[in-house]
Length: 632
Image (cartoon, one colour):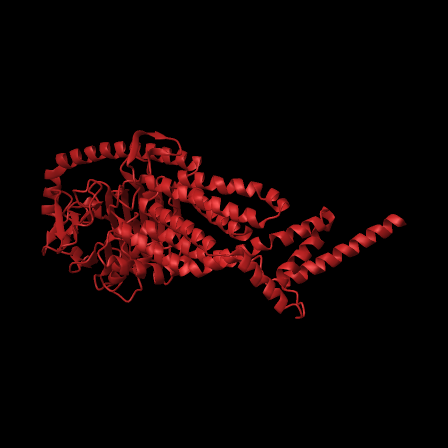
């Protein structure tokens, strides 16, 4: 492995370290988060007091309100300001949706598929819970503004999977919120329609305000790792998806209309789809402290179309389910309009190049392997072997390039002895390039194969943590391949390490050290003594990288560490095999044969060699000018 290959490994490490560093919240963000939590707690106490006062006031004035509504119902907006809070449940075989009569909107979501268990491995995953999620609808009226949470809605036309939540006005007009689960899918149709409310609503304002809030619950074992892959995500109309920052607090006001807004955690999402677009959108995401049981506070404040005349309903849908790539693709087809929802973008597969590799190669190989019904640990092993087999030709080419450099080292040493002075460095470099050209060796030969492998390496870094198929799957000592393995734990937090030791992370770092030792030996065998001195700092950096990886990956998913362990172990075996099957004497004989066969060919300088020659000539001219000036 040559210097360029080594540089490639350093770049990979820099990418991973940079990703981890910039994903962590800063001290100001942590301080702002703590202040926000204090404000939130204070506001919660204030809301509790105000609610108690409001309930007492309603109790005291209940009779007089009922009397007023009975005597002059034609002037009342809606008569449902007093009522009983009830929960209305809709469900199919996959999802259970809870609606509250106070407000008439969705307050709870539970997944019923047996494979989606909560952390306790007994109960089902609950995406939303009463008290942590609210949706408020606001419509402009002629005399007073309508706020949905001020009223008790009456459920009508209720079935197991559909219901209409209704408010009745003083003149007999109605406002309906219609909910209907689409078959056994995770999609819920949600429409809003007015009827005979012209005298109450402002006919000039064909819009409705929606404020949707949720405290995203922690669903996985590792709070830090799950938080890193949880974000408030949105899709701009006729454009790609984007998201707010996963760390600290982030807010955005968007000018362009949106197709949907998603409250997303690592493996599950609640998505509100606006078929008449969302406009004037203001989004907020706030990371929550560890051990609170929550990941993020999400809020989406926006507007959408509303027809006060009732001629056209407001059409929305909600996807409430897992972030499974193919499942999300299938749910695109359940769209009520011709929008291209692209819900599969909720599975973060990385930047465009890495996303294409994952989408059109890794996912299909992974699906093919999982279809065999094998344990997920074996699936990851086979996936690693397939990837290594595909990149083996480039690995072998990179190794042979290093081997050619190694067998030519004695000739390079002769050049170093010929030009020991620093002022002859340019001439020495030019002759060295000429030597490599004579023997058909390219110093960059080991770099290009490494660059080809890097996109696959990074693509899998994005794929494994987002593969919901690994969630809850055990292998060897890991009880969940989507979270860290904590066979060794001590119950208290150690800075930078946490409260556990991930065995797969340790194995990954050990194989990383093994590969580093092999790389250093190869590098030493092909470098001159001068070059070896220059590489001392690089060598220490390479040995330090596994230490950094250990602290980075200790709370990462055990499936990702397991994959990197397998990849590193197979790389060691491949290097051992290539070293055993490569005869340096035969390789040198082949290089000598190449030199002999091409010795009479005109020597054409490559772009780099030509630049080196031009720099050499310029340096020689400068040297002669300096000598002439000294003589004068």
